[in-house]
Image (cartoon, rainbow, N blue to C red; front, side):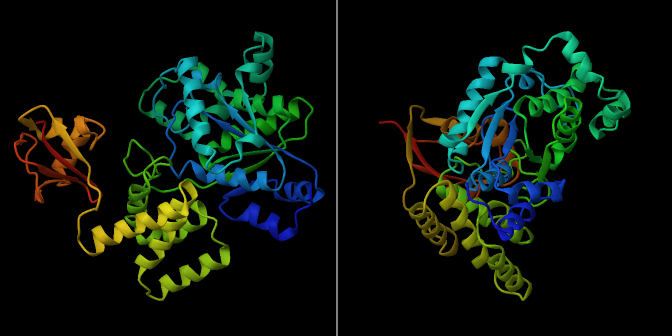
Length: 400
């Protein structure tokens, strides 16, 4: 493989990173031209990815483009225990079948960024499942209970008198041993994974290996601009979402996130992002920058044609206050239906509870009139136009 130049390395280790440990060591390794083993561990307890998840995947892509060995490690053993990071209670155990199905779906999504034909997909049950009790005792001897209890989430549980299971202390040991098994040179992860990443360095030293270097990436805020992106908080932009939905969500982010999204979620060069940031500070309309951002992101996960189509639809619907050109019509068997049931059944909301929440928040309209009550019964003898939020439209009518 060709040796990268210093500019490439500086961009790799500075753009979209929080900490590089040990930076000088990693710079030296990268400049040597040696193929490094780059590890990213995945907890396949969930399957649907959003662009916040893709921040670390895009950093992994940078290492892949430089020709390094990429290990995408699925925790089909650790996933049955569950990473306690950020959790206020013990997690529900997943079955092996659930974890492996999630992993397959995960790969289907990350291939939009990674060349999955040139990565090593590995499963940590292959080595963790073979450890003896003596092996596990040796691992545990490298850490103290006091070290484990320094973690914020465990301290919070103690304050709330919530239980901490002993097996949860084992998670960072197992993740660390993954690095031993793969002889990892570098491990990537979010800032919430720092403790677990450091465990890999500790165990590699104990097993006579050179400790891996660590690259942590930021946690991306969601569309609300306040808390990290997540499906449970409904502030996410899904990797598999339709181009128009993705475009519209990006246009809804707070102005303060524009530059951050450009840096973490696109490949726009740093000098261009600086120009965009400067123009925003000078008072230029943030709408233009958001439209560029939306085009860039939709193109990554779909293509340029889809991005252009989504932009035209956005202009038509939101700038000109027109309806979308291709509103779907669904025909239902009932003559009338409760609005909550209708929203859930047609897929306009993922559940009845979400439907109720949106109605209470004023986010549902029927024939352009805001729905005020969850008890509304709609007659379907005549076609009704249903709008959920700013971007979802559906026509419903009784089946003939």
